[in-house]
Amino acid sequence: MRAPSSDAIVAGDTLLAVEAVSLRFGGVRALTDVSFDIRKGEIRAIIGPNGAGKTSMLNCINGFYHPTEGRITFKGVTRPKMRPYEAARGGIARTFQNVALFKGMTTLDNIMTGRALKMRRGFFWQLLRHGPAMNEEVAHRKAVEEIIDFLQIQHIRKTPVGKLPYGLQKRVELGRALAMEPELLLLDEPMAGMNLEEKEDMSRFILDVNNQFGTTIALIEHDIGVVMDLSDRVVVLEYGRKIADGTPAEVKTDKAVIDAYLGVAH
Amino acid sequence: MFYREAGQFKTSYYADQAIFPILQDRIGVAAILFVAFTLPLAASDFFVGSVMIPFLVFSLAAIGLNILTGYTGLISLGTGAFMGVGAYACYKLTTIFPDVPIVAHILAAGFFSAAIGVIFGLPSLRIKGFYLAVATLAAQFFLQWCFVRIPWLYNNNASGAIEVPVRTLMGIDVTGANATPMVRYYVILAIVVAMTWVASNIVHGRVGRQWMAVRDMDIAAELIGIRLLNTKLLAFAVSSFYCGVAGAVMMFLWYGGGEAADAFNINQSFNILFMVIIGGLGSLIGSFFGAAFISSFPTLLKFGLPMVGIHIGSASVEHLTHFAIGALIIAFLIVEPHGLARLWQIGKQKLRVWPFPY
Image 1 (tube, rainbow over the protein chains, first blue to last red):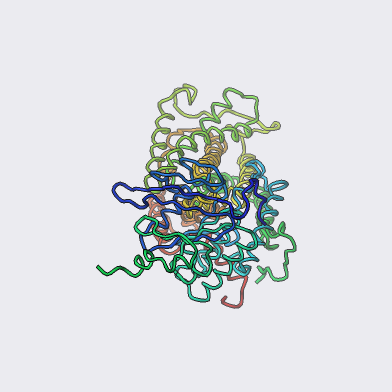
Image 2: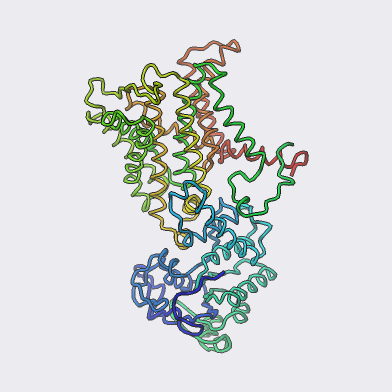
């Protein structure tokens, strides 16, 4: 399902490096001097209290915001002002904290839309919807069906996503991101608002994506239990600054992290 | 009861990706096409010329606006002007190249309209919703001004109107005073059928999905690699193409000439927008429903009421039409924002599970 990657980055090498990134909106400092890296093949968690700048960080990585200072290097290439579609083209996919599906479209069409970049047939063939355009459509339908099988959403294939319950919408959104066959998958609170069972399902999918397709994953999550179980390394943000970075075990015992989450006696 | 998909198993994705996967739908479409092509043999010239031709022309324009507003989510109030661009472009083309078949000119006129549409679509990257509607309103007024103030567009003639010349296709008069409603109907029908087929191909494929993605959640669309400006401009181009062809067809095959500035004014833009809203945003069949409803409603009142013994003046009919359509638009916006197409869909769904409620 995953396209062979053209570059020589192997598991363990740095896939994405964030160097001294700062992001300011007028006087508001969303991020200050944040540096960390994401290695190929790992699950990297970004945690922190509300308003710590986690989502802003993801927005910088996929080009939705441009850092005021600092550099983001993806696959060895630094782009000063990367547009979101360029990030997508480079292999960065993303899900959103508040589900951002195409509500009027079916599950199948949503995930098919995720293949937009992979579909190459020009407008002329689209007018005819026969021959090459239709063959391409069918080929991508096959790829999409594999994702649908993988996420076990066969029964809602032709249901408009606006009618689906929240947990399934989150799953469809993951499916849409997977349809891009990304090298780096950014998940913004994939388990927010889910019950225990749904969280377990989603955790399993995330681990399976990582194992089966070798996709590198960066995820934001508030459920510390999930983060500790899933992730290889964790970066902790507070008030836009990085306060800790390391394995879950290291982060768990870090003084600054405990202070950030539990508060400090003054 | 007859509308069942039970027993129709698709064994390939090819079959499942078809536009009409259900057999009964395909039969239905074939039946409609059969009726459409045999209708002039049974119906009077008056019915063909005054009911069917307007219906088809408006359907085409409504499909055009639906591509922009219904599928891509960009509101436009410039439909009338884009239709006008098509009509004037066709007029200039047939003046300059009188020997080329008029149908070729009508289709070529669509490209001029598409180009103008793209220019006025440029602001759509930055502005949305009502503000975009106002920007397209500027297109409407500017182009309408051009239609009146640039005499070159109407060949400097004294009337300031498009004087439709006689053009023949395979020896038969297609435009001009001697073209029969039946001939004009067949030419329009062929154009509308072909362009509807193409539109349905576009909206069911990659491009259509990208349009709907931009409509439903533009940020997410951008993050999966869809370039917003290109996608929106393509929607403007295709939409304006359809409107332009509709305008050319309207002027050459329906009106047969006349004061084009009046035919392509802001009222026309609203008229088409109402068709799209009542018919159903984001639905091709809805475009036909809306066009049928709004274009035939006045005729129905005018000739239907006397038949049941109610005699009212033609002015009253016009006022009554305005009242009724206004009320219906409000009703639709409240009760069924997806229009007649949604009612059609609900009806089909009911048939599918009949006699059970769900």
